[in-house]
Length: 524
Image (cartoon, rainbow, N blue to C red):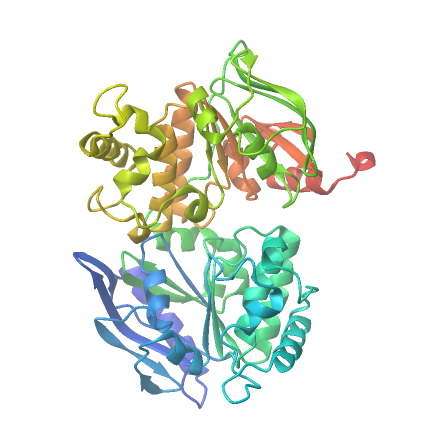
């Protein structure tokens, strides 16, 4: 429901648009869309208008209805009621192909690229330009791909496999595929989630260039500073309904956060920290694995939250994989609670009390078509057996354990039998966290724990992390969002596979960490 304050803002926004209304109708108009899945009302009649050449941000907590609205526009889902207009004409988008023919293009957070296909092959998917008698003209497709990549300023080899590209280059390929056709509107879902600041700046320039040429952008992001910088208008959804549409210039971060969550959100803070004589849980000495991890040494104490900062490619994820037994070290030693630690596999690491929550939760941390109960129980199957020593597990025990975790972590799901794919991103992340917390780890590693997670769910995850540390768990947090490393008692800075600095929590500001990530030896 829109509050009186929200109504005033909407009226202001509407009045501003009316005063400068173009003679032609909006490129896209959505009127009172509604959609339900079983007993869940995903959309409750939101409306919005997107003009050509504008950036319209769509924000809201996980589960607010953003993805459902975009899927309806993309022809993947169909609304129960409501209207969609393109150029003032009502349209019925029943398939993705119809959406594409209208000039609507969508780049999802989990990029829909074929890893083993080349850049040229991926960009040619769905491209009909230059077709001859229904057959793709490969020469014309390659020429168009070169033209598009040049427009984006992306220096990418057309013949390289997409699996070998960086996150930034894969995203540019996905954007380029949208531009192979005549894109009139592009929806971008969490485009900078895994970008460095330099890579994000590059994307901002691309967005500005696209809007200057008349392309409309729907920008979906939980990074509110980006939203306020890029957007002309911001539409906020909450629980499937419209909170309001506001001119971005009339908002600050605190106001926008309040509209999204409905209450004040506090910045992450570190707890008291471990005592000086706290037991060392993990000790790493001269650990290496070419080419990304080189001579790493660190200690993590019981009850400590240790952050790891660094640019993409610094070796942070690769270090986490070594600690978790997913990759093998070529040099160095590790000790866990004072004893030699040589995990043979992730299963062996879990058995010894080490757990890793991966950055790619959907592809590496979850079985999306399985239930919440199935996913939560995956790491604790031994405890769910009918009897010790028997090979059979008890579904009842698994569901009971999952129900306990759902309550403990506030996972929003109608039932532990619900498919994980039908949960919001924030609740999917809580399922991954609960799966590994259920193992009772001595060391918990979280790699980019809040990517794609809204500000409200972030606050809940921070509270979970602090509570784990306060009960004695050693925690390592890897994050590209340096502001959230404020919850850490110490922060290690990685460059080119090495730890170059160790910063105490109070001094680990975003500005300080950013400077250290770029600093050379002489400038430290």
